[in-house]
Image 1 (cartoon, each protein chain N blue to C red):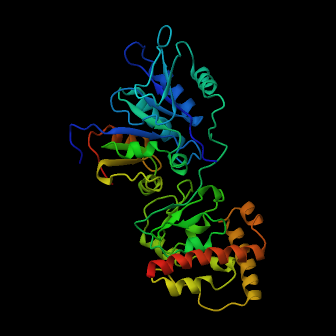
Image 2: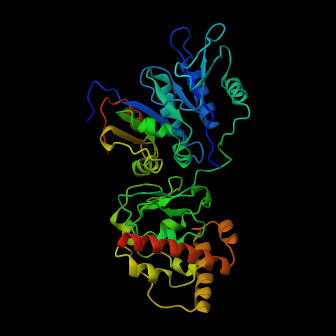
Length: 117
Length: 280
C-alpha cells in the first residue's frame, strides 16, 4: 500500500497501434480522466514505446506510486522490463482495460490506494 | 521502424489559460493519441518528462501564446494558442509543428515482438534455436534476450509455442496466455503438446540442446536423416498453415530449405554456446 500522502500518478495507454483493448473501455476511461481534475499522462502505445526503449519509460518507472491503465499485468510488467525500466510491483497498480468493465477500470483508477495484483 | 515520437504534447489549463472543457479536451486527447503522440494534462503529478523531445504546450491562452524556455536548456519548448480550434485543427497544428521529424504512427508499424516473462524463462534457448530471423540473442551474462525485435514477423507468435515454460508473450496477440494473461496449469500442460516445430529446423537440433540444458523439456528424441527432416518440415508447415497459427505470408516467405538449415545451424550454435557458457 502506498502512503496516503503520495497520490499515485496515472498513466493511460491508448493501444493505438493494434487496438486490442476494447474501444468502449479505453474511450470511457479516457473520458473519465479527461473529465476529472487530476493531471495524467497518456501515451499512444506502451508496446511501441517498449519496442524502441523509450527513455521516458524509465522516468515513469522511477517516479513512485503509479496507476497504469493498459492491459494484462504480466504483459505491462515485462514490457517495462524489456525497456530496461523495471516497475516496482509494490507501488504500481496495473488496471487491465482488456478485461475490466469501464466502470471497474475507472473505480480502480479513482481509488486512493495502490492495489498490486 | 522504431522511431522517436519527436514531439511531446502538454495540454495546459493552468494560470493564464482557460479550461478546455471536458468534451473538447477529450476530442483533442483522442485525436492526438490516435495519431501516435504522447499527451500530458498539466498539473502536479504528471510523470512524463519530455527528455530529448520537443515539448509543445497547447492552451487556450486568450491571446498570444507565452514564450517559454527550458531552464536546463535541453528541451525545445513551443507554446501554441489553440483557442477556437477543434480537435481536427489542433491535430493539424501539431502535425505542422512536428514537420519532418520522423515518427512511427498507427497503421505504419505494429509493435509486434516477443516479450519475455523472466519469472518463467529458464534460459533453455529453444526460442533462440527456433527463430530463423535472428530476433533472439544472448546477453554478456549469458541470458536470453530479445535483441532484434524489428526482425520479428508481424502476427507470428510461433516462438511462443516452442517455449516449454509459456514465458514468451506477444501483448498484441488476441488470446491468452500469449497476450500476457496469467498462465494456468492447463496452459503449461497444453504447451507440452505443442506442434512439432523442430521439424521446421530440419532435425536434431533439440536433441543437442536437450543434452545441454536441464531446463529444456524433451519432446523429440529420434534421429532424423535429411530427407525425412525435409518431409517432416513440409508436414509441419502444412499443419501450421492449416491451424492458422503462423500467418500465410510468413510461411510463404520462409527462406529455402537450405537457407533454413543454415540459419538454424547458426541459431543452434549461438544457443549451444550460451548454454555451454552458462554450464561452465
